[in-house]
Image (cartoon, rainbow, N blue to C red; front, side, top):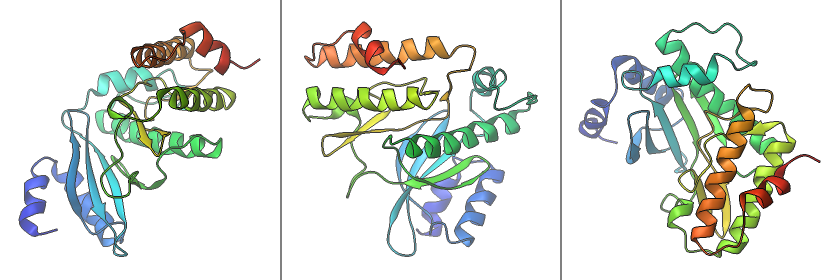
Length: 231
């Protein structure tokens, strides 16, 4: 990555984030930012290349424009994060840490997610899904939807059995590769002990049922809930 190219992307970030990016580059975690995958109000996602030529994903939570009040509402009643203060940076750093930890836990129970490789405050380095281009989102997939629906529901059940709920599951944060789903965006995922967990489960089920019905799959919310719920 050229200096000019870094300056172009660097303008997106605050000085604190730029310093952390350079620290991670110095540590050999990646050589630099390459192509933007997604630029949003909450997070910026880029591809990056390691010294061995491997392409990775670098997710950077924005410190200036994140809706940290929404993040705080998720975090403040999470039993895993007692007594967190309503400090903007601390909340955003915890939000990123939640995603990193939740990705690891999801992998442990057999849910296909990107492998998280490193974290530094608001920056996460993770596996890139896709051989050349980043794998398409479920909404853009042309794979067999009947097969995909069964596999998505199986992953939802594995999360449930592990006392987890994704909390924002939809066709926008599931990737598809080779007819298989990959769940992404786990920062809001939480345990089923969370006060609003039951509502999050219902929301995930509603989103998934709605999407697959639009794709011609004969499935109802009640059927999905029955399949994923612990007996």
